[in-house]
Amino acid sequence: MVLASRLTHVFLLWTDEDYHLAAAIQVLAGKFPYRDFWYDKPPLNLSFYLMFEAWTGLPLRIADAVFVCLCCALAFHLAAALWSRREGYLAAAGLAFFSIFYLAPGIIPEEPDTLMLAPHLAAIYLAFRRRPFLAGLAAGVAFQLSVKGALVLISAGLFSEAAALPMLLVGFLIPSGAIAAWLAAAGAQTDYIEQVWKWGLLYAGSPHTQNGIASLLHWFGFHAALLAAALWYWLRTRDTQWKTLLAWCAVSLGSVCLGWRFAPRYFMQLLPAMVIPAARGFTQAPFAARAFIAAALLIPAIRFGPRYIELARQDALQDTAMDRESRETAKLILGMAHPGDTIFVWGYRPDVVAYTRLPVAGKFWDSQPLTGVPADRHLSESQPVDPEGAARNRQELSKEQPTFLVDGLSQYNPKLDIHNYPDLAYWLKQYSVAGRAGATIIYRRQ
Image 1 (spheres, rainbow, N blue to C red):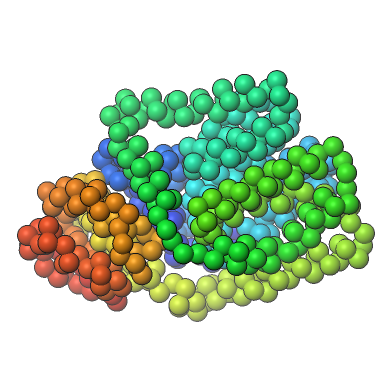
Image 2 (image 1 turned 180 degrees about the vertical axis):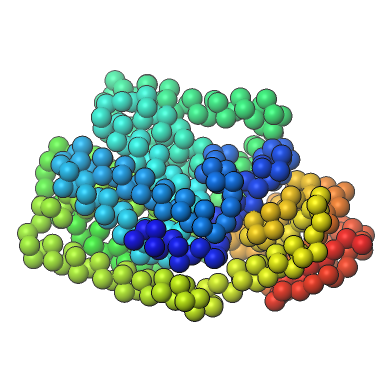
């Protein structure tokens, strides 16, 4: 079922996965992240996509399905170690089910929050099995996927004895130390700090309206089966682990709420902390309660199941409109491209880079660091979080000469039209329109 769900997405890309695909393509072209191209995520995110050479289509979707099944196997081992194989199978099945039936942008892309699932589950399992050093290593890997991995360390500490905490911390520091040495050897540490930490803090500290309570209620509503089973466990069972599992859930929920932004993918850190106690609660509940929990699975199945059929028939035109536009853009570019050509995209359209597989010219390949407006709001807002830094970056961009300039933003948000920036006016004069795909304009250097 996991594989079938992913194969319905074989002909399209979702936001977040395309960014890492495009970055991995730059690495395959010989560029070093941070130093040679802008990449505002920790470096281990690239490793997943490099394993299959960042190809879209079937290789990507098979890799997605294999990763989900790996996480299910880890959930099985954790629940089986806590109780029995019966709970293990239920935990694996629950994780698989909710990795299929939810909002596609929150479960399909293998981005930092999703990729953290594997080291998150591994860290908890290893901590429970009294292997603090390995648990710390797993938490350190999670931290090199997302800064929220620090909360994975805290969660692993909940399952560890006090005497094991130093070894847990030692294990956690090793991946960070190795990455720091690797970046320093390549002369990329300063760029890494600017792009991952400085930009990340500016993004996290900038106001962005979101109804957090509504987001939480929506998620728990669609995951009512998990919530009901987990509550049964915590309210009706008093084994030796219930307080630790409740604390783990609280830490994971706190991670979701950090910054009061509730993108669907952020809930992936809460999912394993709900699946494990829910598996035990289901086995402990009487028949009537189990029937209610099973019936609650129909809520996400009915809501999200038909979308897979629509995608398989290619009927979900509204959901895939921008992706189809990017595909058409890439097709036009590849029809004009020659070996050695390079690309730059104004807007956040890394799928164009992923589809063309062209190297970017210079460090910048999307407009976030050039406008100072993060991608989660640049279609509707124009207030920069770092105007001075954006001006410096535009000055650096004007020294580059990409073959193709793809404008995928100006028509969507005229306030961020590339022609509104006087410091790019002279640079833009060397480009002329070479094609259009929907609201995306392709310029080619004369």
